[in-house]
Length: 120
Image (cartoon, helix red, strand yellow):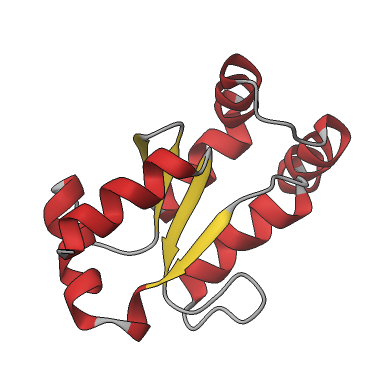
């Protein structure tokens, strides 16, 4: 199975997938840590894929999405974005809307707390 096939299968079998450096419990870079932290805090169930464990996968996800950086978030098979985009979407409420529209369970109160903490 090629890296592209593996990526396609992973995003098709899981509603929310985060390709990241490290794991959700032990991120290996600040950007991956930020996105995993947001998802964990909001109570979103997601599949974490450690791109550091496989160099082919690390390059493959960049080619697959045509996006040069890690982490990369996919929701229901669609590429959403990297750290900056996810941060902006979290603070604007767009991420809540995306999850709600896609039927992804999340903690609305936690999402609101993130915005309140960043508004002060």
